[in-house]
Image (cartoon, rainbow, N blue to C red; front, side, top):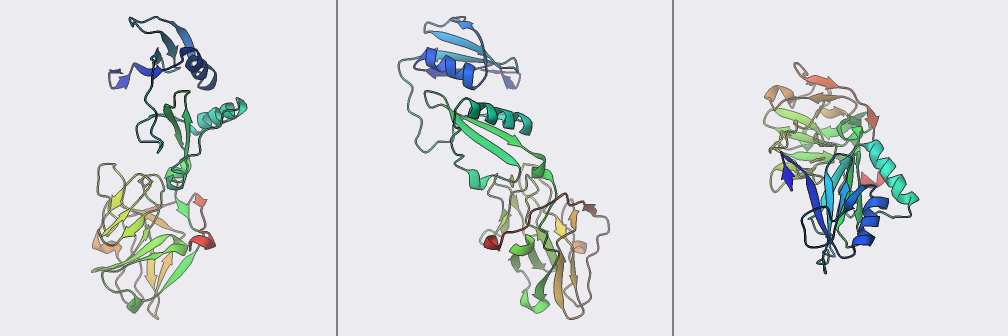
Length: 282
Ligand code: FES
């Protein structure tokens, strides 16, 4: 039941009121307000959350089985990272094993998740987002020599795994786009067929110059500075990052020996964590 944009109470059908009530009190930690307090023919139990919202358990003869795949219809509770750790410890201390997160490999950096199921199989997702999700992550790769100018055709996008960036050669020159998603530090991939970068973590898309397309309000992919030495080798400094509002040709480094990145007007960001790429992923 929704109220002023939030919900006032959540109604959950259960087949064994005693058993389910015990689960929501002992495992989830809700408070019991009482039995059969609402105008309802079937047995009910009213429970309180610390947000002043309520959970109403209604006993029914049968609850449809939860889809074996895990399904996408479920309730999600968002906690702080501290609350999440406390909840996990409490669940473990009670001998309750949260289910293995089926999407673990799709979680962004600093995203925590556990799934728990009540006695009737209703799924609850407990989530938290840590600071790492918005911090600037360095690869520790230093300055990466990508190759000679002529090795990169105009219009090409080359993923340089070691430094976690894409080297783009467009009509204006070279750009190095950090592969870290500006939403929550997922790792983006280049989807050549659709001419965009895609983040599988929550579905963000960025155009060929790294500018976000969608309604999640993400910033463009960050830039690592490019320079070209006198021999025509394209170098990328993976220890520096620049934020931008959109794309402009001045961000690209002309494809000629001696050209350097002009950061005028762009905000340099401070690297707060190193996340080196493992050998296996290079
Ligand atoms: S981390 Fe959320 S869409 Fe990329």
